[in-house]
Length: 111
Image (cartoon, rainbow, N blue to C red; front, side, top):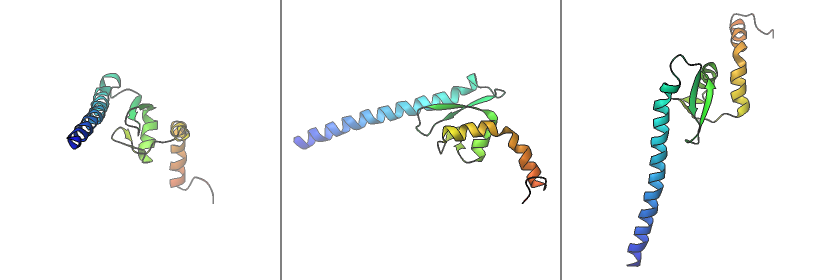
């Protein structure tokens, strides 16, 4: 009888844990799928899910693309949560593209 009570208690706890996890999964998927209503294809900003799976970061499109190229973002989600400094650098590095092109064609920094 005691084993049955322990099993029932364990299953009830597991049900509560699963409900919280499932509720969060549904909330995140709903928010990601509905972001097109708030952030259309011509909007200058994009919402990225943080690695905690619960909160989001609002980024400028070029900033998000730089972070994606650096390996921080996949499928509108951070796979590695960048520091605020890295996020700020991705926004401010808009002028670096010209320098990168000059470097590629031999007009960059001298060695």
